[in-house]
Length: 321
Image 1 (cartoon, rainbow, N blue to C red):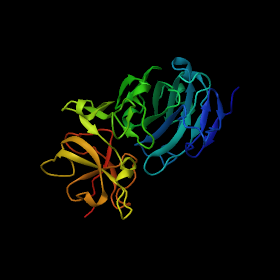
Image 2: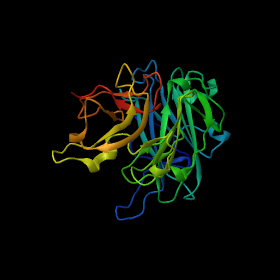
Image 3: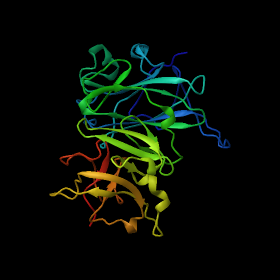
Image 4: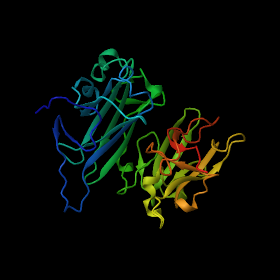
């Protein structure tokens, strides 16, 4: 059966998209097995609080491939917050627990998002993913709708990443995360836990893109970056006696000659206790786009250095005294 398009100011925090129809996501509190689901986290770096510059986001779900272009959107969100957070939603399978699903997320700047395909995505941003469900395993997908992808529609099997078309397929086995650990590991949609097989990140400086995989830190090449965390939500185990949450810091970096808050090289991030954080010499990661240290530090994109060591990532550079 088909459901009518649902419109909402923001993407709902938890909603299940079942085939072509909406279903409430029912989880058993007594179950010891994880849910079979995809969790999409959608954000943008373009102005999205002004209706004259942002018409909303449409989400399409179905079989991967060209047919997805012709479907009606399953969900439309009409706004986002000041940090560019559109919202998060959950997609669940309608049949086999290992089925492959196609996702298309379209932001309309000049046109309504559902009209973007008819305009060949001019004045729009489109992100595509093709991923296989993993039974009893929640998979997190980071969906960035960025300004360098405006008007670049690619084809039905590719998506725009940093102003260029890349394959939309994702290895779902690489996206598994431990409960509460969601370390973004590259533009290829991989998320890794904070221990064990952590994020090993490679950076293409010329293209301004990143590629990641989950593996033991000891197996990560010296030219790559080990990300044990990307924001304070990964560091709750480091909460101190005063109740301060742990922080995720860039603990190994080569500083720029003119501005110590714009390092040229980063090789490691790790969790630390608030009381151990050297506020005058270290940077805190904030991939959630939330302000750091109880709202005293502004979260910004890492761009700004002559060589951006972490394109696509965020840290707080207005350091706490």
